[in-house]
Image 1 (cartoon, rainbow, N blue to C red):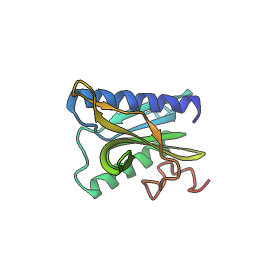
Image 2: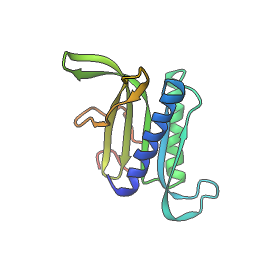
Image 3: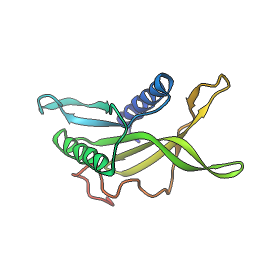
Length: 157
């Protein structure tokens, strides 16, 4: 992961922790490293990280598909070089007692080198507050999306 893309991860982590503390849940979010100004479309001097968090969870598969289509269009319009998709999910996690279904926060980062997927368990700390565990790489996991978010990058390149 390039240094600039680490800004996407840091912002996504900060937003997820903040939402978890404030509301007890994590809403879907997207972050991009862009080359064009989001307001004017003019080229930027340096790549800039932008992000947005949804106001509510997805209500249907169609709602999710529309969101992904919007991200693809915006990544093209803004000449994005990296896109991070984040949210809360239920996943099978390896524990000392075997596989367990657990709440997790996932982060999917896509750039010209490919896709990296990570997750962090959502747990309760010693004081009974929800907290985000360590962010772990999901090496070898199947991509959660069937198509890329960066339309200008061919799948498999």
